[in-house]
Length: 167
Ligand SMILES: [Zn+2]
Image (cartoon, rainbow, N blue to C red; front, side):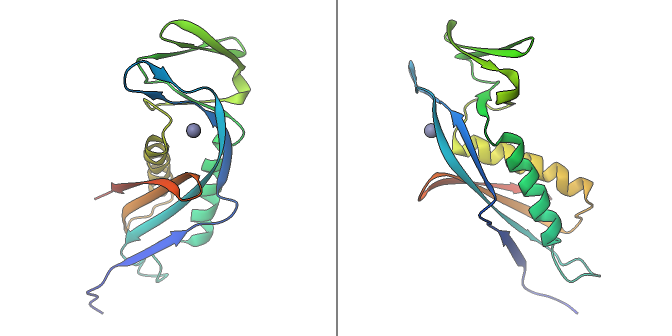
């Protein structure tokens, strides 16, 4: 059967959340103080139907993957490893954080999520999570998925969406 349309499937569940601390830097010499958000995550996949199952991707598996990705950064201090103004260093069981070379924080390493991003904005968190999801989908053999749209909301009505084309 020839299909002219395309499919989008989405998952937004009340458990796809992470409550984490962060701070971001702004242009110039401004840096926020440490604070937290109850982040919410939503995901949309676009793609072709799996020819045997008649779905784009298994919801059960997608929910499990997303929950795992959220749990990995839940109740953590989110720290950017690629911010030229923020120096993050691991020392034994601790992580030290400096802003423009001035010591600022000392955290237990187990309380930190060190992320390969330049700033922990919702935009960068959405891109990071989309990249993690891409790896998980590839490992799960999701051949038909063509696009990932990943949304991270940090406040009611305040979110960013990253759209990642897989092919
Ligand atoms: Zn914030």
